Amino acid sequence: MMEHNSELGTRGAAGVTMHSLSKAFEVDEGTETVFEEININIEPGSFVSLVGRSGSGKSTLLNILSGILEPTTGRVSYTVDDPEIGHVFQSPRLLPWESCVKNIEYVHENNPEYTDDIAKKYLDMVGLSDHYNKYPNGLSGGQRQRVGIARAFSIDPEVLLMDEPFSNLDEITAEELREELVELWSNFDKTIIFVTHNITEAIQLSDRILMIGGGEIYGDIEIPIERPRTVDNDEFIEFQREAIQKFRSVE
Ligand SMILES: Nc1ncnc2c1ncn2[C@@H]1O[C@H](COP(=O)(O)OP(=O)(O)OP(=O)(O)O)[C@@H](O)[C@H]1O
Ligand SMILES: [Mg+2]
Image (cartoon, rainbow, N blue to C red; front, side, top):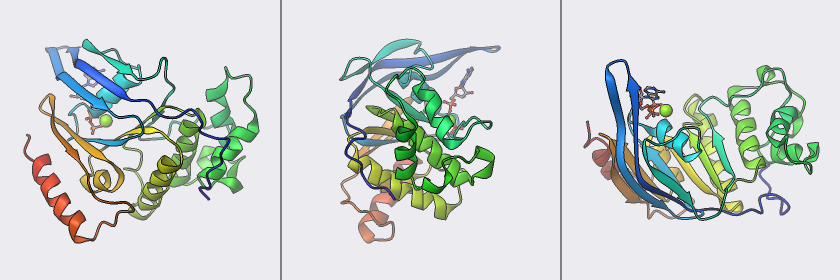
């Protein structure tokens, strides 16, 4: 499982810059401002977690980064022109009437060089070699999430956005997938922006944590802990304590 195939993932990583990003929605009661004036620079190849309470604007921000939503003001720039952006959602959004292989194939509709072998290689990479032709409802939740991850990596994105991808899984499966994700990230040169409300998960995975709340990024902390990281050592626990304090400092 998880072997790095040198033919895969050659496109590399892109940096992301958010320039004065603001987003407001028009709702019945008037205008709801989600956040204002976000200015953040994300290094190519880094693993950044975005944490915040429910409703703080995490998904909205990811949707702006991937172009699903337009910001109200400001803009996003990337260090490469027209980057490929992968987006993994909280539920993997698979087509129930298609097999795993076909679920990957459909995001490659416009690529004449695409063959089933590509889907299979990415499915191998996430440990699904025995399940190529299964349909989503014949897979466990963790396996479905793996298909979503394989599909996102299969487009060889410079930036991979992940919106609480493991929050619906049991802790043991989530832990397994976290380890696999870190391994994929270190084998492939990708920028990952990972949304979670789980601080421990954020510290385990990332180089840097951005905290969003009260309409702004109120926390921006580097994680100096060496990898591989274990959640039960003193350094981790101490770091976690401080991060949780900071996290709670905003209503
Ligand atoms: N299309 C929309 N129209 C109006 N308001 C919206 C829309 N999308 C999001 N919002 C509002 O923007 C705010 C942020 O929503 P968002 O989904 O980004 O939160 P989140 O941080 O991802 O929360 P969660 O952790 O629950 O997923 C919420 O108050 C939400 O109601
Ligand atoms: Mg959300």
